[in-house]
Length: 429
Image 1 (cartoon, rainbow, N blue to C red):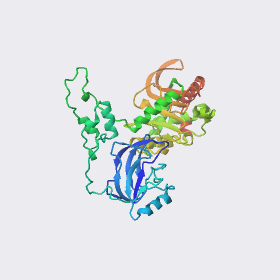
Image 2 (image 1 turned 90 degrees about the vertical axis):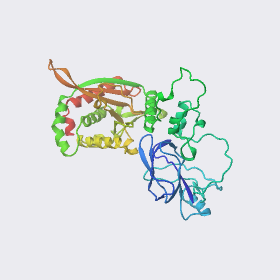
Image 3 (image 1 turned 30 degrees about the horizontal axis):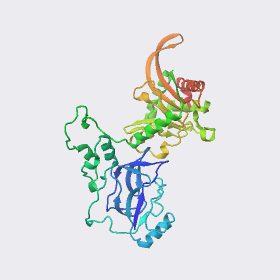
Image 4 (image 1 turned 180 degrees about the horizontal axis):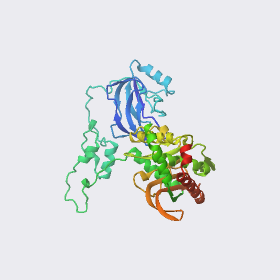
């Protein structure tokens, strides 16, 4: 029988994904669990496994194209099941089938690793479709050009009639390269004010960039942002880190300042639960988090991602340092799982590692706050009524002003500063 496997929702509310790499090709035999394709979603890069043993008959989509959840991804020929048996198997394995031969699309509810296969009769009896024999020649009706979504978007941006472009892809499909290389027929003189299209480079938005755009806009529209700026002198913290850095390195643990900041934030959150909460307007209530799951913003080549250190209050400085390194490595190699990204209650963004001092970080909505950490600057400070050299760390706390008042935000930052300026308690915890 022929089995249509539709693109499943591998996340929470996933709508689409971009095809990064096909692991299979037409005519290839696969086993259940074999990876079919690598997809980039709005949060992760994931491999989609085959739900069945069989032979690949067709692949729906090319590398770079966007696949929609619930639409066909691959077609698999399953040996040993034909005709009425195929329909009976569809009823047995998935969902009750209407008494008609046409198949419907699956309901697409699946998770990578425990992939549920397509539902509602996504099968059809075996035929010679997909075989190598020549199709019957017949008059071709006029129709719109076949084209990839990227090519259509580029053609629209460049004001090119895509029906005039000769496609070089499979079945004459117009590709991105065809649009880039297209030279329209000259129609009189070009007006002086027209800009040659080769002055621009067009690239499609990645799934990560689209998600960042959507989330940032949602945060700015949904939360009432307020930011508090402070500076803390951390010479003692620098000494503590220098003292323990070598012993940590002997255990293959990289000790930076960030684990201390995470620990200080967790301690401060315990004193200010309002900042470890979120607002539930639909039910007229506040939701106070009893766990301390700290998101760490990671700058990757593909864009900003925020993996989460779960239950950071139960971890030592060393364990936090280990998790930061592991999550950053996974983020940069695009191996973060959905579980790595879920459940954050507060976020820290360390733009100081790149060079910034102060910024106004955008809240990771629906969380109540985000702490921005700037770079350490050596500058004069007043100590015991004398001007002495100091090491000053810049902090920027953005909060949802609907949830957190200005006084509460200031007290929270002061508590963080208290721990960072006297970090012995953090290292002993």
